[in-house]
Image (cartoon, rainbow, N blue to C red; front, top):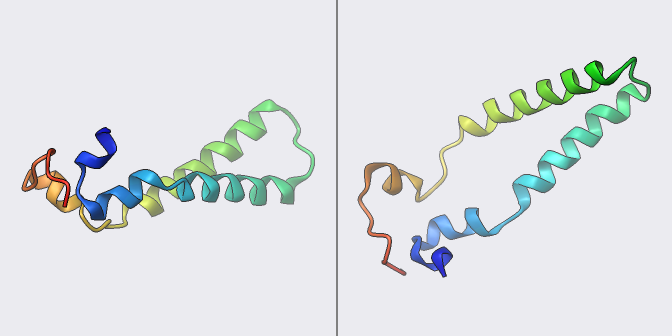
Length: 80
């Protein structure tokens, strides 16, 4: 499995669906407040703003193990 070729610290980020669940909850939370949208454009704009905000917040996070991938200091066939 390709999943097992990544270092252990990275695997938990690849395996989990927590990010998707968090995204769905955030979209639901934001749309619940509005209740009625004036059109499709308003929904698209709200979704865009939610996704932009989450992308900015998540992009600033440093995930353990990914620094090695960026610098290329691990080999893909290592399983430790």
